[in-house]
Image 1 (cartoon, rainbow, N blue to C red):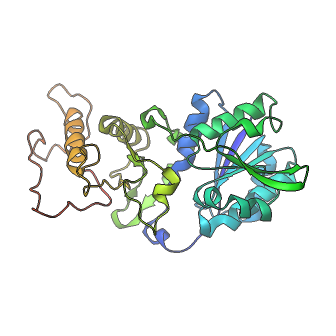
Image 2: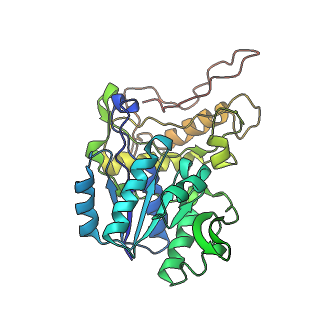
Image 3: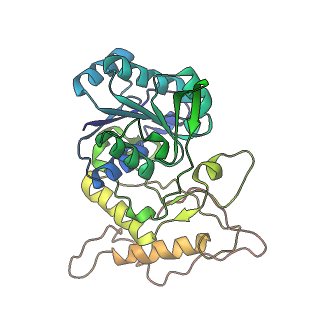
Length: 320
């Protein structure tokens, strides 16, 4: 079974000013699929490569996928719908799947305006997608689609067409068990212009402990989960060793306003410091990526905390 993932060709001119960002979602889904035994996973980054519809159609025609999946935020929804329509027109038997924030919340509208989409994955997709692909591979699709949690799809019932949303799937509880396939990305094309270096965005955490009315993140991810800092350092080390690069900006903010030990930024900083020391250069030439010109981090005190004020939350980057 061949599974093809597509990052739609949407451009806003906003974040792109700083460079081309690697679509980490494809690496995490591809890695999960391969770990489940589905080894033939392909990826088309139509956004970074600025693929026009004819270019995308040519690639889809050559790949002959059994399953095509795409993602979409609200601004890119029509590009994603169009990409899946092209896939369905070229390969009518292909199962077309859409995921992402917009499809999760607006599945009724999406399925109404894009009937060529066979299923929508609601929420984080690693475990849901595996169950869906297994059903397709076993010949249980679409007969048993209602038994798969976390889906939405259109069907014809006794009273005519209707849109069905199955029971919500649980969130991925063990983020460290996900083994992303970073090799599926074209690393020479992802660069952070202000620092003139390659950029990666590994997951440090998912969700948010806050419930801000203006933000969809806590509703999409539902519960707040952080990874073992040592596992994150392992992943960053793998990225540096396999794909090169000088810096890896981390795009996961750590909450400090709530005084729970598991979400305080102090916890994250100390844990990363400890894990990073473990990988520093040693006298016997052990592996590491600390700058030898810097003093050892062992015993470095955490910066003092201002009384009465929470520490700043937001993007965090490991010191060089």
